[in-house]
Amino acid sequence: MLIRRPPRFAMNDRDVTPQSSYMNRRDIIAGLTAATGFAAFPQTANAKVAGPETYKPLVGSKTKYKVEDPNAPWKAVTGYNNFYEFGTGKDDPAKRAHTLITDPWDVKVEGEAENIGTFALEDLIDFNALEDRIYRHRCVEAWSMVIPWVGLPLGPILQRFAPNSRAKYVQFFTKNDRKQMPGTRWPVLDWPYREGLRMDEAMNPLSFLAVGVYGRVLPNQNGAPLRLVLPWKYGYKSIKSIVGIKFMEEQPDTSWNLSAPREYGFYSNVNPQVEHPRWSQASERVIGPQTGLRGALARRDTEMFNGYADAVAGLYAGMDLHKFY
Ligand code: MTE
Image (cartoon, rainbow, N blue to C red; front, top):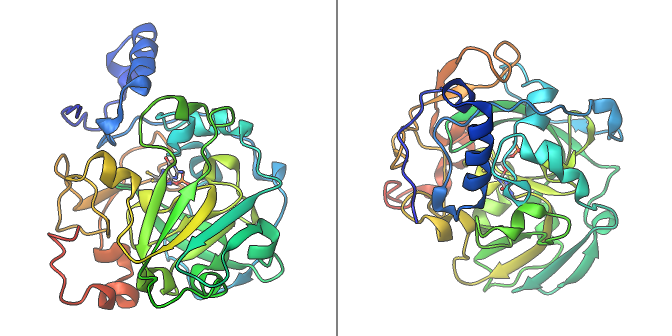
């Protein structure tokens, strides 16, 4: 069931609906099946978030990956999230994700590779070799934030599993635990959340596995303890709290493509020329230090591949990006 709503043009639900009915309606919306999809102009969040000092520090070496614009505030990065396993509201993850147990954490590696098996997080990630990378994070809902991540490039980690010649794609899975992740009690998406990449996309130096943000371990709402960051793709490709990696010959299923294929394609590259069927992707609302969560809508034009065309356009040479969206 696809629920189509007209864009609310930044109008907050609270502005038009009394608090009590808003809460009811919101509970109902949270329980509806999914294909509700994303809303073009999401509500602003107002979660109380724990400060950075709450999280263990991580040391990452500086890399060339940075963005000229200032970082989004910690409060926005950790308080305005999408993590549907904890609810569909932007502030649900910050309020609820504390129930996720992130230590110990194992990742199961399977499929078309030589070194498959189950690996502890500490065996996958060398915490003494972390890098700092500042990337622009562009959500399909047409907002963006500049976020300073800490982690490691994905490619060399995948290579350690020695994918074989049949490995053309790689799929990722999020943990799926009803007790720890209350949002999975509703069929908002087909759980577990899953995502996929072509191998050459995964091997691109921009693809990044994050274990931290702002020099601290990831808060649960940001996908602790291990999440993907794919700066040239819409945010939903950057899957959180990864427990599975599968090397595949065929193009894998992805959660949002299963849910609403016309709206969310396999590639999901940021592309201002390809409209989402329900809203434009030509510009984006910037959540930055000046605008905060509730501030005026600072907008910028969306860039092809989110500004990373130099690094990734070659991956799609000759492909019709209106067809392979
Ligand atoms: N991963 C899982 N497992 N579940 C989710 O709901 N939401 C995606 C992505 N990864 C999501 C997920 C979406 S829509 C976005 S925009 C980003 O996470 C948001 O990342 P952030 O909350 O750290 O900004």
